[in-house]
Image (cartoon, rainbow, N blue to C red; front, side):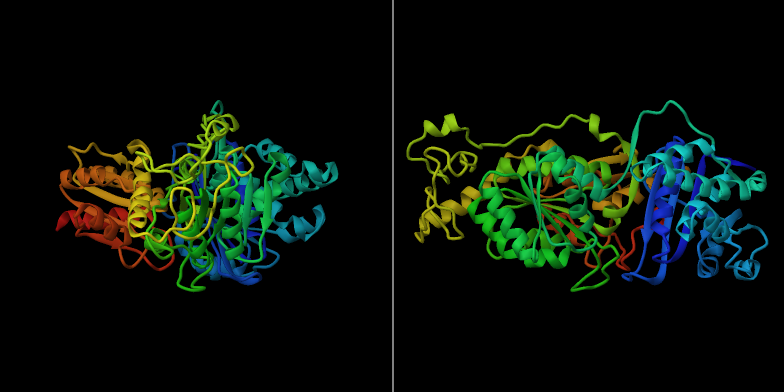
Amino acid sequence: MAVVNRLNCKIGGAAGSGVAVLGALFAKCLQRAGLEVVATNDYPSLIKGGHNTHKIGASAEPMSAIVGRYDLLIALDKLTIELHAQELNEGGAIIYDSDKVKNAEELASRKDIMLVGSPLTQMAAKAGGEIMFNTVALGAAMGMMNVDFSIMEKLLTSIWARKGQKVIDANIAAARAGYDSVKAQNGSFRVQIQEIKGKKPQMFINGNEASVLGAVKAGCKFVAEYPMSPSSSILHLMAGHDFDYGIIVKQTEDEIAAANMIAGAGAAGVRAMTATSGGGFALMAEALGLMGIAEIPAVIFESQRAGPSTGLPTYTEQADLLFALHASQGEFPRVVIAPGDPLECYKEAINAFNIAEMVQTPVIVLLDKFLSEASLTIEDVRVIPAKVDRGKLQSDEQMEAQPGFKRHTFTEDGISPRSIYGQKNGMYVCSSYEHDETGFSSEAPDMRVAMIDKRAKKLKSIPDYIIAPSFSGADEAEAQILLVCWGSTKMPMVESLKLLAADGIKARMMHIRYASPFAARAVLSALTKAKKTMIFEGNSEAQMRTLILQKTGYHIENAYLRYDARPFKPEEIAEAAKKMLKK
């Protein structure tokens, strides 16, 4: 039976062979056909060699993670067939280069799938060289599913417009060659793609890209960063658009310099940010403390990867939560946000800059490799209103009326008016020492207590509706089980709720975005009302469970922890929940 507008595809090949490029083109074609698309990748930390895969799921219905086995395998080498042929559904297909693979049947060792060999290398050479190989393979895949060729033609035209008509024509010719080479076979392939027209414009975007869009929308004007995967694309994207948006982008000599530079920029009244991974964030701890005691706003995006030390540089983990909450010596308030999908990355990036200036303290946005690089179709964020709130930043007129200005004056909410250097009456001392209201150093015990208490109060000004957890799935009263998660685990968990519902199980999800400040009352209320609870985390120590216990006194007995440096799958979440319900 034919399946219309529902596809899971895996692309595999050696590092450097263009797996990611082909995957991105493939996903964008399906998006332009009107489908909801999700794409993830898997690759070792090698520039050349090793085995890379790119996974794409597409559906007419909204989706946030790939569910089930694959329908189509695009093999750019022999190894891909050997490793992944068994992951195909019955009736699935493998597209491979018949110029390079002569024993596909032997490698696949399956009789219930289609083997579609096509001279991809030969067609690429004819179209303009082996560099066209991926475009030929893209055409072949679209031909298999009977995708309207004009969709691919328009996509290639837009992508290569800056290169001129000759390059556009060569790519279209390469895609057409691949498309026509398998067109005769598409009638027997189980999946067909039919264009869905009339949908609202959508973006196909990953977590890093969405974070950049949010930062730009929030008015970020200074970026200091030392590249470290998987956060490096944030630096690349910012540098590529600095002139367009009037942003100064500085690649620093190391992460220590990056953190100190954004501290200086924040103190001068500039919205500033850096991005790094756990190893780089470790080097920022001293500057983080400076921002805390001097009450300097700044935003740090920390994309977690498997540690400690170098760990697994290109794989994911959720093991930096407690580190982010306690980095640097001493006690000072900081905000820690863990968005769950690209749309939340965009929204929480804007919140991060507003909150940083509202409460005058550093804000850490915890991404991870999975979220940073997983791409989803989301609503066009450009139409979402964004408010810029600079808190108690004083205007020139306000400062002129404030002789004897005290930068750290005691207030009811703990948040003091803030000046910009150069404003009349706005001069003050800013250092890493404990201080009095003026900023001058003070070692008096009563002043020390007063300043710690002052700073601690500031987070209470963040509205409850911003930090509250979000819920999905069954209603609270009907839910048989409450599944708890934080950060990127939201994406596969959303799909697991559908799997559980299909089995007649009413499950509810609680996703925690704010680790600090923590919505203790809302979280505790949900936990105590639930019939059964289970938490899912990408670390070995159940760090969010520890935080929940610390903040609420409630211990979640059942935890499903994954720490093999890979993201959760919807199926495993659903199975774990079903097993727990049987206890």
